[in-house]
Amino acid sequence: MGKKLPGYFIAVDVETSGIIRPGTEKDGQKPSQCISIALLVLDTHTLEEVDSYYSTIRFDPTRFDWSTQAEAVHGLSQAQLASSPDMATVARQVLQVIQRWLPPQEAKLFMGHNPSFDQSFTQQLMAEINEQLKFIHRALDAFSFGFAAFGLENSDEQFTFMDVDRSGVHNALDDIRLSVSMLRQVRKAGEAYRKQNQKPPSNTPVASTPFMAEYLRREAQSGDFRGIAIYGRSNKPGEFKYVWVYYAGMGEDRYVDMEAEYIDGISEMLSTGKFIKGNESRRPLVDGKDEIVTPIQTNFPSYDDKA
Image (cartoon, rainbow, N blue to C red; front, side, top):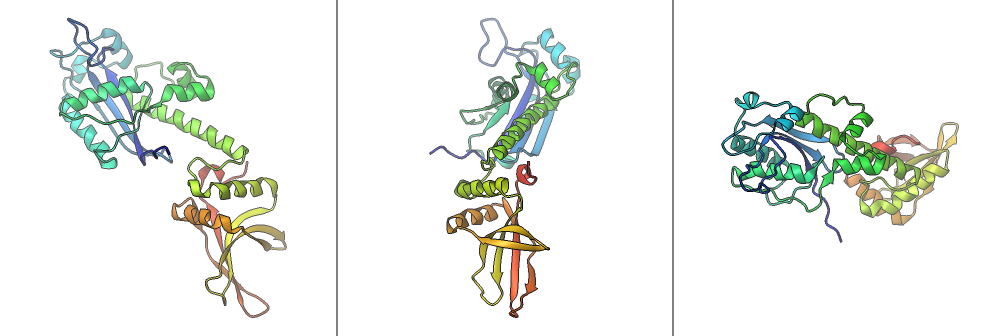
């Protein structure tokens, strides 16, 4: 069985003084240096940004190569970088943000537009403080998102697709947020496919998948389907049960017993916040007893509205 991904992942973009990755320099060459870094921490399930960091970095000409071609891309000059913090200072700050959300010993899920490049220069920073980040062997590649989902073949096409003007110099923070936006577009397209084909949302707990499949089937096939509720009678404590709810006209609802096999799924959905309980309502019946109904509402952003 495959391991679950961490609850959070990091998305990183760097600007560098050139294209010579650390450790790949030839005789007589110096490696390029990371001269700016943008880091986002994102919730793995919702893709919401929970933390961020950005800094430029002072360039050290005694140790690293400088490329005028690279300068034309990122627009950062050595003079502009002279007042920036050094590599070790930035490395400590980057590590502090990461460890605020992810345990030091835990392998990190890494995202970038060119992950191997961004990883190599992130590790270059960490080496300044004798640290090395452990990454999951698979990385999230923003280029692949756009190519696989929308047929976009390069960065410029992704910028155009996202209605972003990137004709000027690149900024690492802007670029990584654009990459995350592309990831969200792909997730949105995937959820639309799931909804159309009555497949459970991507963040549905595994145990409740059979229930969600049935829920979506009823939603698609029943024009008057309202959802589910906890239904019971006040004189029978402990006998509340889950029911399918339909609109019956004249302000009345009708309730259909739910199969017992779905109860664990609903309980899991409630415990993880995928479902939430609404307000309990009571009304007297002709036999003098109370009817009690508590609606359960979906908490999936992609499924709140019917297609």
